[in-house]
Length: 160
Image 1: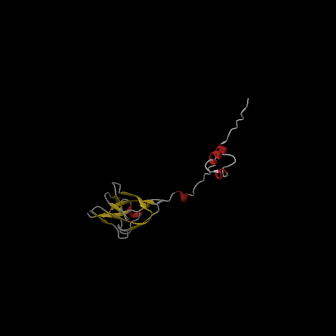
Image 2: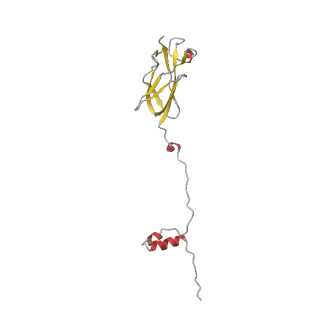
Image 3: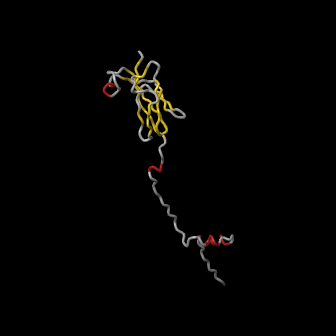
C-alpha cells in the first residue's frame, strides 16, 4: 500500500503554475513572496484643490420715496423716508444676462453669477425715476467673489 503525500498549494504557487503554461514564467518573478493585505493611503486635498468657486450671488434692496435732505443717500437721510419698491427689474451683464424682479419687500437676489467684475442695471416701474445722480441705476460695477454675497441697493423717487 502506498501513501500519498498531499501538499497544499498557496495562491502564489497556483498563479505560477497557471502562468507557466502560457509562457508567463517571467510574470511569476514579479509576484510577491508572501501575500499581504493591501495598504490604502488616505490623505486630504488642500482646500483650494478640493473645489474652486465659479459663481456667486448678488443681492440688494430697491427703495422708493422722497429723501429727507438733498444730497447723497446715506444712513442718516434714508431712515423713515424710503420704502421697498416692488416690480423693479435688476439685470446682471453676461451671456446670458441674469435677471431678478423685486418682490413686495424690495429685495432682489441673483444666483449663479459668474465670479469676477460684473455690471448690473436696475429698471424701476414706470412711475419712478432715479433719485440721485451719484447713485446710478445702470452699469453699476459689482465684484462677485463667490465667497460672500455682493450687495447693491438702488433708490428711486416717485413721479407723482
